[in-house]
Image (cartoon, rainbow, N blue to C red; front, side):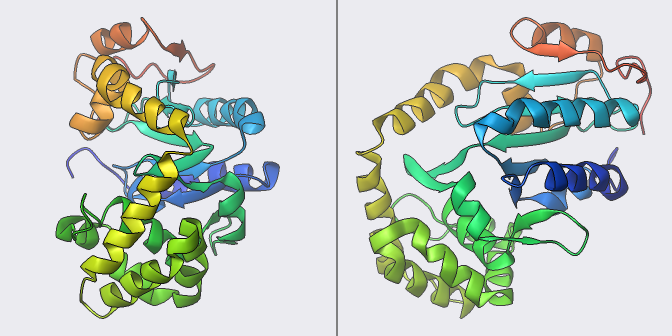
Length: 277
């Protein structure tokens, strides 16, 4: 994509440092798109570590000439740490959440992720492929009503992830408690190139029922979707503009600064006036 560059060498020192400093932290999805220069790093970690993770992110941004750093706290499950890149229009984004939700209830939290994670050969902690496939099967591959989202299944490489690590996929079925057997049938169907509608409807029904026990989770999600998200320039940029910062960086940052922390990184270049490309 125009303006993007391979950020693998940029990201790796940060991810390795977080892995060493914070045993409860791990990546739960999408690291490859971040390395490609267009996506974000989605991670889970305990709330007591968030401030320390932020400090590591800010120091890393300063060392690499990124900035200013933006802290967005509008997402209910945890903060987003972002930085502008003078060499690209795409935001650099690290999300740190306590949990990931699906159908109004908690699907996976930082403690669950520890049991489903492994040390990547590149030196950072991440969810194992089969478990990532299960998470994406639900979050990206299943439409409301239990039907298949073919585009989500394809773009998120769900079948490939599930097939690469069957044991990890089976281990992740415990995330849906009593619905683990229907979920396993759904997994087996996807790997075989099919879709088990009845099984996925049972999984969805159980998660919806579980949401009744987590009213704050469901309500916070609704508040975010219908009140906070439309008013947040950071969330709008992420959701509607593929993380591409407007050419008028000064104007966008001024809007962001009204209800976000915007931190100048010592020693970093000022990307608001720096060309990229």
